Image (cartoon, rainbow, N blue to C red):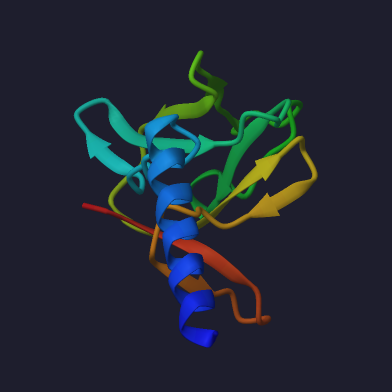
Length: 127
């Protein structure tokens, strides 16, 4: 009985994940921030967000629209928010801010750092 249960669950989940990949329910993972000639490219898949900003040590953690160094991301037709920013070489902590209130680490960047208070920030190294 237990073998049948395990077997049927294995079949179900295999079909489910193959089906999800076929109909694009499971999206491809975005790359972490990437350096280009134009600057560092930030990307975030947050289709339900109304606004997304990048806040970090490189812009004084500014995230509100009335602040001069705020990095406002633009939403593409694919639901991906993007911004390209010139950043001087160095190590920086940063987060994304959704709708000017929800702070999240970058889900595509595997590098995080404790800010000294037990909170995690994403880590960006610009060369």
